[in-house]
Image (cartoon, rainbow, N blue to C red):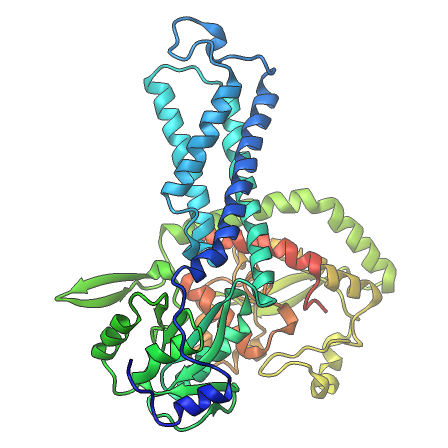
Length: 501
């Protein structure tokens, strides 16, 4: 065992820590119960969806092909078919990595694999039935797979929420030892603490030069230098080592560190200098023995952009037709409140800086714009945004509209006209855009949205920096599937009313 750096043993003793080996199966056993719970939930959902489809289409005594002797599966009851399809469904999920612990609880990959596995099985069943001339009722399949896919996604969402809450309470977490320069370690610690649902609990740090017992801002104990990482990891019972930028160290350091952690049950994570770039844009390309990261450009044009615009307009048109009675009720309530106009139109900035008139239900008094200068000193927000928690300009009806987010619904008109999207960055005011730096102006590369990452992450409770960070992340990494997930999460955000005022 390598001798620890001077003073490190004193720090360990002060914290009551002695070097001890880590059980390699400890981290695996922590997630085993959660994976089993997800599997059992999937069993119930798939079997339930198939039996529901059977009940909708048939009586319980129905048989494939009506019992015709010319069919290979003639006389097979649909109960047997349900069991076989459920087994095939779960097997497909397992083969495609739907139960890998690395994808559970974070990101879109888990949902993509669930939907992809369902689509793959549905296609395989259709091909087999066609080639084998097996007359399986199409209505049975048409009900089973869509219902099952939705149920699986909802089930995974519930399991994810439970996992996040457990991690925030300190359960099912990984004990992380962070390694790197002081500044980069501090940034990483801040992120991991802010995003506690990820399940990374920082227990200590190793810096290139061991000088202090604690990182002052983060209150994280510093246990040693770069040569002490493996021993310190075992001493503090860390099961994960996260390496961020280290000045003056190269691939040799990481190689030696990886070797020293082999066989001791400690996982090595390397934090790249690339930030706010999602996985689908990053591809590993080994060249002459060097692992090169290829980063694709964000897509601002092309078929994906056209399909997003088409979906936005079709969905917005349908929602306007569906919600027209609600529009009438809200408009009457606003009119009865103070006899002012029901709608409020305000100039906002859209794609590439083009201005447009944004529609909303009026939630403030009619002369709200004239009062804003006298209230700026009372703003609850930092940065360029102006927001007051208890804004005196908001009417009684308007307060309810804001808390329920009903005031945003008329923006569907802007979506139909192609000025906004269902999902995108927050539509800014011209006065805000004039204060943008070059980085922040990238928000204007895509259409602003009725909802977005800012909507499902706290809305008005977010700081200006967090709002910009979320909007830029969306601009750089947007996807159609990601938009659908944001729309689904928006309903929960509206019900919770967090940050709505």
